Length: 433
Ligand SMILES: CC(C)(COP(=O)(O)OP(=O)(O)OC[C@H]1O[C@@H](n2cnc3c(N)ncnc32)[C@H](O)[C@@H]1OP(=O)(O)O)[C@@H](O)C(=O)NCCC(=O)NCCS
Image (cartoon, rainbow, N blue to C red; front, side, top):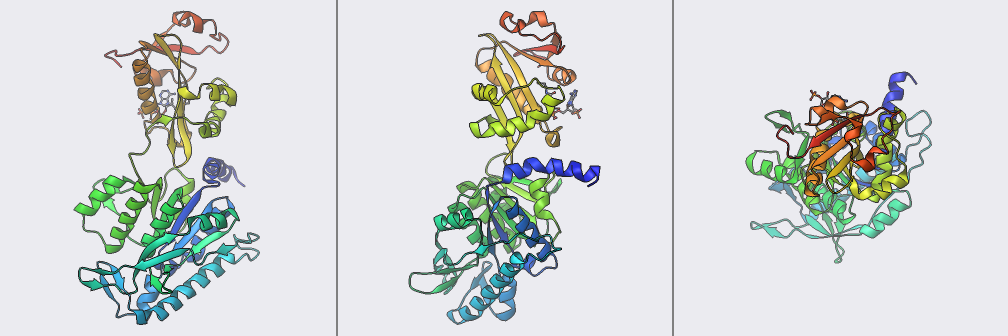
């Protein structure tokens, strides 16, 4: 492995750590399934599973069904499924199911999936009811999800299987209903409380004035649906993404899967490759929790090794956890800071760190402002910081160089002369700040 690849691999490791054990519901659009890159995409999905992600795969069959039922009628982008069509639809869905399963199970030597021995399971996990009559239009065997067997899906995932769900649902009356796979993926993600819902679609990029949309909130997506002319598929994708997001799914990703490698690029690099939809504005600081300690240690570890930050053990972090704030991006602790009260009037900011991949995006500034606001709210009039390498950065944010002797007495006795850190202070409420 050359140095470049090694660096890349190292940058990937925190993402692997962040995604391991998480549940992702993936939706494979029929356009993508028919495309030339489907084998590479299924390999990427299998590798995601090999890295410890729990994968639920929902697939669409619209293109296949359009071929065998070219005269189908649609209402608002939704197929009207006649009872007589169901045999043809079931056959197409069954064929697609078998093909995906066979491709995922292919573990030939000299392929990227060699030795994986995947188990792909599913069946009977979605109950449906008729969509009924809308706008005077009877949708007949087009259905809606009535219930998802979330516990059974979770049990299959815990057994190490990939769960493959076709866009069909059974009803207690013994009928089979044709389901919209995009909506199905959203409902499954909500029912299983998935960590991510990922749409692998075949639509053109959504653009705003400043270029391709990369991030959007649920409110922003709703506004977009009101104000823009969108294809029926984009409309269903955005609506299903919003539904999942406002329910309980933290992140929804919308990726144009006709491009090779979109999935690993979205999940294992900072740049990403598609649109990420979040419930609220992303990247706001929050209180650190016990589960974040591992992420904080991974973030500050290299900086401690380089002598940029003072060493801090897991126990110390845990002891002062209430004073730590973090910014989490997609399961990764991307930045952290700790505000330690020194006495009733003074506080010290320690352990400010931003992951190298997230620097120069104002994460540092956001955490600093947040810390100063908290210090002020707690009655502090001055915030100190000791730094060996970020002196100019702090000066740019209203801190002034001062002498170690100006530290509050209790802190002064712990000042480490050998480290020689510069002491800076910010007077809160100062006009320069
Ligand atoms: C210092 C640090 C927290 C800044 O975080 P960040 O999110 O990248 O900072 P912001 O995006 O808010 O600011 C970026 C600006 O600061 C500048 N900057 C970043 N680090 C700097 C440093 N050490 N010295 C001077 N300027 C610096 C960048 O060049 C950029 O300038 P520009 O806006 O003119 O392009 C981050 O670089 C870091 O984690 N450093 C290592 C840990 C550390 O030194 N912590 C402080 C001790 S507690």
